[in-house]
Structures are given as C-alpha cells and as structure tokens.
Image (cartoon, rainbow over all chains, first blue to last red; front, side, top):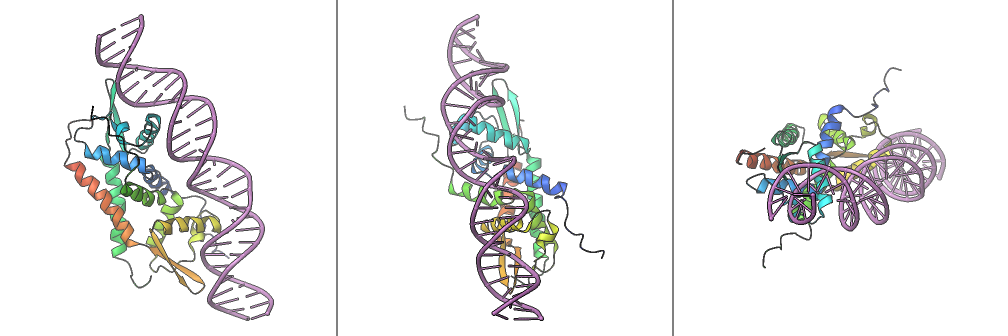
Length: 112
Length: 112
DNA sequence: TTTCTATATTGCAATATTACGATAAAGATG
DNA sequence: CATCTTTATCGTAATATTGCAATATAGAAA
C-alpha cells in the first residue's frame, strides 16, 4: 500500500504566479487599459480616465492591480504619472501560451 | 464646444470577450487543470480531482468555468467524461499576446 | 434491480472584487 | 500662500468567487 499519495497540498508556485498575472487581465477595464496604453504613441497618459466608462477612483484601483501584476509600470512625471506596458510581463504571457500551443500540436489528436 | 465627448458608456464587446476568457484562467486551480490536461497524453481524464488540492465539487466548478470560457471541452465517454483543451481558444490567447508584443516592439521607446 | 463509480448541482459560509463618493496628498500655477 | 489638477486612498455597499459537505444524476457492474 504505497500508492494513493497523489493529491498535493497546494498548487505550485509557478501556477500561483501565472494565475496572478493572468487574473490581473481578467477584467474588461484592465484589458481596455492595456489596449489604450498600446494605442497611444507616447506613454504619458493622464487621460486614461476619460476613455474608460468608470469613475477616477475605480480606474486608479485597476491601475494599481495591473501595476501589482507587473503588467504596467508607472513613473511619476511631475504632476502626472506616466504609465506604460511592461513588455517583459507581456512577453512572459506570450511565451506561456505559445508554449501551450506548441505542446498541443505535438499531442495525440485521437480523442475529443 | 464640440469636444468633451470621449468617455464611453461601456467597454467594447471584444474587450468583454477576451477578459472573460482570460479571467477563466486567472485562478491557480484552473491553470493547474490546463497544465494537467496538457501533460497527459490521452485526454481521457477522470483523475483530475486526484492531482488537485481541492474537493471534487470544487474541481467540478472550475471545470465548468473553463468549459464556459471554451478553454476546455468535455465529451461524455460512458461513465467518465473526457476533458481536453480547446486548441482554438488557446490559440486565440496566443495570438492576442503575440499581437500585443509585436505592437510593443514597434513602439516609441523614448519614455519610462 | 441494487450497488458502485464518476461527475454535477445545491446550499451555504467565508472571502474577494468592484464600484463610487468623499477625501487626502502632492506637485503646478497664479 | 491659495488654488487647481492629478492621482491615490478610505469607507462602504453590492456583487461575485471560492470552497466544502450533502445530495443528485446517470451509466456500469453485479
């Protein structure tokens, strides 16, 4: 009786980490923020509030969460804050999904 | 006075959609499920509960959410259910982040 | 049919998230 | 200094998520 010891106590650190990053993008407001940051040329952005259907404090919270997940970074620029996308984290996500895709194409396709 | 009409009423449909898919992966349990499905060769999987640190009803809920976001599909296979990853949705996510990455490399890098 | 096995659903309780108004903080401007 | 502008934080209400035990469902096996 040495089997029966499969169930783990917790998820792995890497599962927690990637879920945390992904979760930060799991809200339309935060998707919209990323897409807006992507669309403007300079990253000096104090007008994010104007392009989102949300009040300023709410936008501020969403920005905080994106920052917390390292999806964006903010630099204080006098009175304003200059937000922009953190390329490294986006790249991490890209790699994550590219890797899954690659593994999927190598898999047995004989079911489902 | 014709400006001052920037703030939208809601996010776009596409923002809602992508956020919905991404959100479904924004939990360690659901990341773990995808990674497990990726790791097993056949997709006949009734042992997902055994490899997650969660009770069966909770796993069932997470599976439902992944199915709802079209990240997995389940086929009833007699008594069991055969779950596997929906490649199309993974590919959609891959494309989404690859596209963002690509746009980022084309951008002005003169700030932040 | 009865029982077993695999999965889903229901019914909570605990916790987290989201939103907004009010307010604070801090640099810019007059 | 007083005021304006920009962003953050707090307080709080509404809602959503998560987890598990209990139970339901349905095919398989006896």
